[in-house]
Length: 348
Image (cartoon, rainbow, N blue to C red; front, side, top):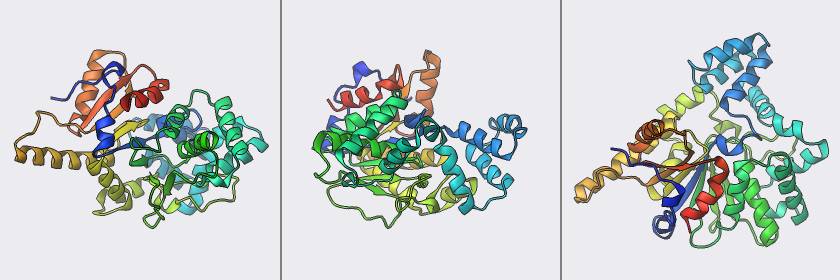
């Protein structure tokens, strides 16, 4: 039987023991970046519009029958593009809302911040202006609250061991760097280590930030050294190859963190079959070892999923059962604006 989800009143200090023993990690998905970035369904709709206006109703009907990656694959075929030609199209659609909201001058600064993996790449006033612009145009952004909290947590004994991102954009790490620059200055050195390839340079003393689904180039910028278009998992063929490969950079990164640490999931739906498969492997191994040692609990959980309550008990209980066998326990919040304070409470 799956463990019942917890409320904010029950989670004080929940991660504190993990932080001082096995460590903890944060896994983020598209939910933390709305409304600055579109979700999967919105992205598919915009790609359909590029094909033709008449295609939009048809694609809308298909969304309930086919996965987003299958529809994105079909969009590339309909637009008669190669994967290399399709990547900038995806990037244009992904960043279209931000670019439409800001001026050309403001986008130049935002683009520079998003492509600056090093805090020293921009001055303190530039990072401050970047933060002010994001707060001005997207005040409800969950990533803003998370980044503010993380900036105060990424140094010290309770810092996360790693970040796992299933977003193809670098908004959260850019916001973390901005908050660090504003509070500690730009000369103190980097805290995060962007990992976009298996050969990425991982420095000791920095927290690795794994872009598990690749990283799209930021449109209108010249700094593409951080992008990893070859690692994008937007198309169905790339997703299926990832699912059927015994070893991949993405699976190895995720599995290592899941085995070694307690993961907190934010902004993800936990419907991704690959993610569920990886969690299932780790959980099954954990339960088997606990059982062999003679001290297995009826249900063992080592990971947590912060999610907005659906508002009714039946949906809550069913959702908890959908992830209980993956070793994941729900933490219910009233609204996504509570994520930052929830994370803070878990380490308090």
